[in-house]
Image (cartoon, rainbow, N blue to C red; front, side, top):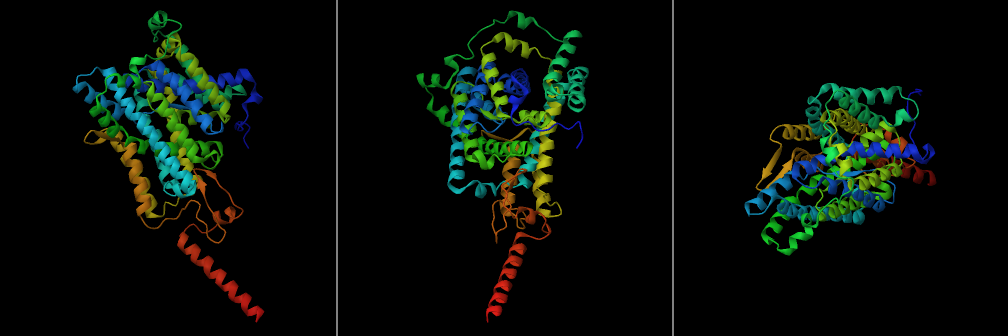
Length: 487
């Protein structure tokens, strides 16, 4: 093993409190750029977004028995829903902030959908549900998540490539040649070094920082869902719910992909323990709470999975530190102004690395599960998932059906799941037992049985049906031989 290879750390307390705090800051900065971008686009409160990203993360950790090192930030999947409801509200004579409260109500009901899927998982088991999400589907979806975000990173880098390159090269140098703590916090160092470089060349405007107060409330009650019921427009309430609920289908698939990615990155099967039903409920509850108070929907963040992959520090305590920091700083407009003053190119350079790491985790998901691309059905599924996702994202941006808009990732996920269920010739099944052989690899983490090693060494060119037939024939021959011996 290379001396430069970082060994996984599952208990960050061995690093000491100061280093854990630094790692927490790193996770917070990793999610900050993308998280505040959603309220910036939609018109929601940045401070409320930061507050409920932290609270949502803690809710998620509580629901998952404090075991999953995931950070929850703003979901981009609902941007089309916010825009559609905002347009309907403005057309009905409302102000934009008032219309957005109805969109938040729709997101609240979308969060309830997570509980329905969680109930199905709890009733029928993770394995039966996960048969619809094999690596040939989840792998390309994870790849697409990173590639879909890549355009955002490039557009940010274009603002000033020198600042972006400072961030990129700082991350690379610290990660490859750094020692001890330097090797563990490359993202944070990339942000700090690039920020300082930008300030030195006069590319940072601190006027807003000087004007911002030190302490302030993150949200106002008139911008929350509760304000709707003073004088509700029930037609808009129904329209908002109908427009936004379907988006949850895509975000739930994205959630499964993210949990698979985290499982693959950390080599721990979170789909088994604490269980997919718990991760779904944690994500759904966090989204519901955030939406009630006028913050965007929450989702497990791929950026922080990228941080996990780079630092190899897999302790959930570090992520909870980041959540507490996000909550703390949400009450400081001064801090929000400092971060908002961060050059766009700095965020772009860091994002370029992180988004690439997300796609790399998807590739790892496919490789480690030995997806057979000599099988035409697998090629078709992966090809359509990738092309639909990327093509729609960088083409029309979304496919609309009336007032409902589906992102490229949503369309690709639905098509991938349907094709996997319909097309014949499946060569991978979750939790399917036959004669004592079980293979239930979940996104790189496996529910192992003693026979798994034998299964992995079987001829992958044979279908599951052929393997079962051979097993039955062998069992029948053994029975006949035993009978003949007795006679």
